[in-house]
Every structure is written in C-alpha cells, then in structure tokens.
Amino acid sequence: MVVVTRKGQTTIPKELRDKYQLREGTKLEVVDAGDGILFRKAVSTIDLIGTGKGSLDDMKRQLDAIRREDV
Image 1 (tube, one colour):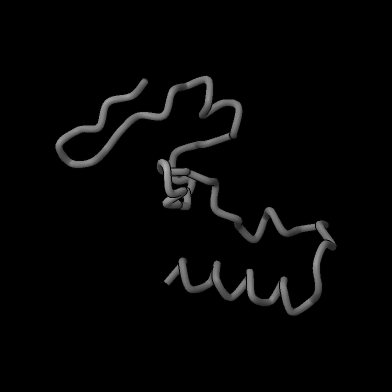
Image 2 (image 1 turned 90 degrees about the horizontal axis):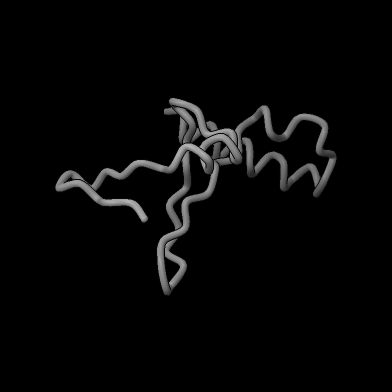
C-alpha cells in the first residue's frame, strides 16, 4: 500500500522500482484502466533498438510520439 500526498505524489516501493528498472528521470505513462490507474514505463528510443518488430510505419509512429514527449 502507498499513500498519496496532498500534491498527488506517491512513492513506488523499492522492490518494484528495482524489478522494473525505474530510476530517477524514468518516464511513466499513466493509464486509466477503468477500475484503477496503471503506471507503465514509457517506451524510449533505447527500447526500440534491435526489436525489429512491427512495420517501419509503426516504428516511425513510435519515434514521432517519443519526439513529441521530448519537446
């Protein structure tokens, strides 16, 4: 269990930060899952290296989304 501060902040338990390699500066997507909130590690350019999955258009869309986040 975690507590939300009056500023809307919370702490992710260390065991989960370690398990999912969440370090200071890691970007998380916040998703409304309908019955709760899902925090998911955002895809970065580094994550795309060597994947070779999906079409070239899919990869371009993902890269464009990452570039928009960096602005």
